[in-house]
Amino acid sequence: MSRRTVILQSFSVLIGVSTSVGCAVRGTGGPEAMRLQQAPTPTRTRYSVTEQELSQADGSSVDDVVRRLRPEWLRVNPTLRQPSEPQRASVYLGNSYFGGLEVLTLFKVSEIRSIDYLTPMAARGRFGASCSCAAGVIVIRRREDASPEAQR
Image 1 (cartoon, rainbow, N blue to C red):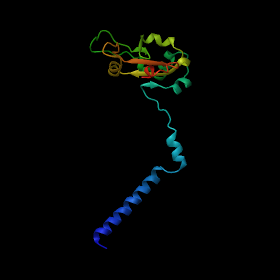
Image 2 (cartoon, helix red, strand yellow):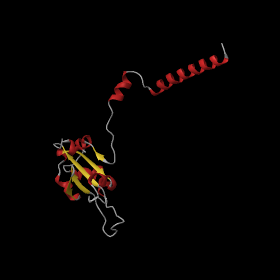
Image 3 (cartoon, rainbow, N blue to C red):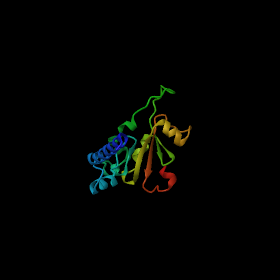
Image 4 (cartoon, rainbow, N blue to C red):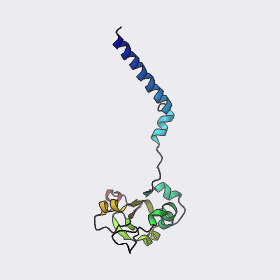
């Protein structure tokens, strides 16, 4: 055998061994691994309250839940455009403006599918430049809002 053939065969063996060891270390084989890969758990993000979190939350209104789970959404945000007037987040029901933070008390948790927070930049991108979103937007989706337009 030539020296080149010996080197190529050695290299092939090393690649095969490292691949099988890597798979064994990560545990990517077997039925247990397949079951774990197929059932991802929803993760908590700072920009949304999921239906699962809502079902486990204590509180009767969306205001209670947001105060408990995402209090940072309710903070005053000073703006550079109007420094004398600190801004608070606006509330949208689906794609329609609904009011200020005080309207969160009007929604029962049992009626809501999800709650999302949009940063001012994301809110302007979604609702346009005329959006009153200097401090962000809280978007509420009701359970009966099943149309594709309401889910955006």
